[in-house]
Length: 134
Image 1 (cartoon, rainbow, N blue to C red):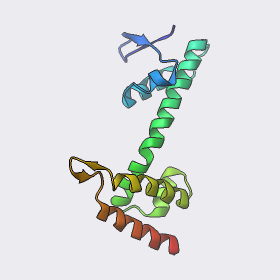
Image 2 (image 1 turned 180 degrees about the horizontal axis):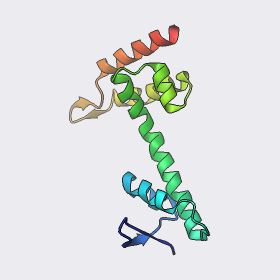
Image 3 (image 1 turned 120 degrees about the vertical axis):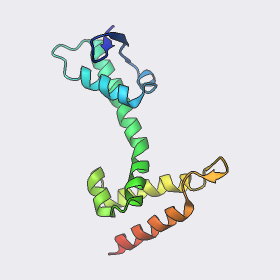
Image 4 (image 1 turned 90 degrees about the vertical axis):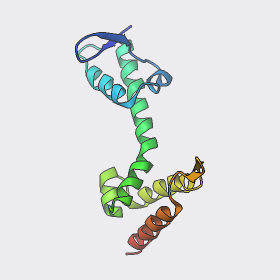
């Protein structure tokens, strides 16, 4: 079984060859591992499965994080066209993903408070509506 090493060459353990194993690794560590093992000259079966598992975990996490980062950009004043350009998505898809996330987060209560401020969500939604109508 292939192993991964840290930057100093110390063996750290077997490469994850299943998505479930790769998804348990911290994102920064996962990205480092993936970069270190991409494009081997003669990848083994395990190398190829590890690359697939790690890439799938990165893609899944980025998909889960994207609405949060869209929200952060919009909250910071980014326009809808800017958010669309940053994500590579059509503006309508940016709005759809953000709204689906915001609808859940604004009613999710953590420690007696909503996960995101409903007023902030309404403000951003109103701005997006105005930008869409232009």
